[in-house]
Image (tube, rainbow, N blue to C red):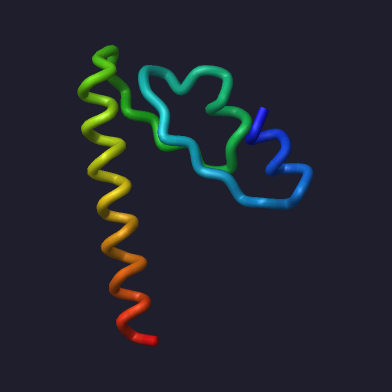
Length: 64
């Protein structure tokens, strides 16, 4: 599994997960769980999170 391989390489991991997070919830450093049974709703929230992360990175790069 990618999360386990990342751990052996000392890489920090984030998981964008739905429902209860499944077994991956315990394999990543930062599990972000969207507590819904709707796959579409979970994907929409994951997309929003991805855009927010990009905004933070863009703002940080503008300061460089």
